[in-house]
Image (cartoon, rainbow, N blue to C red; front, side, top):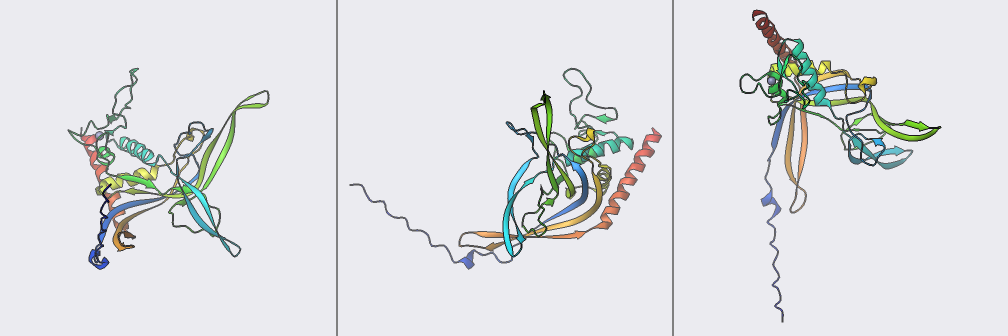
Length: 303
Ligand SMILES: [Zn+2]
């Protein structure tokens, strides 16, 4: 006869009060450059999905929102998308500005030529990361290169399209207009042979650059780069992807997290974010960058 397996006694969990850590809090402090932008029409850099005729923007999670219709509260689901390409646009702009100022910085390429021998590096730049050993340039210090970490982080809240004026949701996003254009690429005797769709968005959105690790002059260089940003995404050769930089704000952002008991074995982490504008540091950053450029000019003249 098979032996009966002794029942393991479940350990009684200790009293909740003993597992509570009172007033335990962590604080994450960051310096963030917030940028408010308007685009009349933009197609972020995304490819199409296989077996689909629609060129998609990068789809993120669907989320719920509530809105009122008469006396009723209704719930609906919508999809969030990602805005891609912001960091790349900023980097190219910063590179171009540095060249204009007479400062040799890293190119985005770490290869001198293509396999066919075509030069990849334009004049006035060096190979990405090649300055690291001797004299690291400011673009490398900020943006890094393959294998070398970037100091900054560029991010934007997801975008979504909700037209109900009374909507409410916990999901943080930029509410913009998103539309799909159906296009016919090829017809034969009046019949459509090839067609495809493209998604665009339009409206105001905000993105953030984490400059916590940057020096004043590096922050100044980034601010200048942002001020020059004027296009984003695909299709700019046909007039799309225009950016209007409307506002900038440098803030000290503190995220405070605290564990709170929510069950016998689980703790919910309460989070709240404190934000404080630091306009003085914004001005200081630009002054430091201007001073740095003056030094470069003087040095270039002397050579
Ligand atoms: Zn460099």
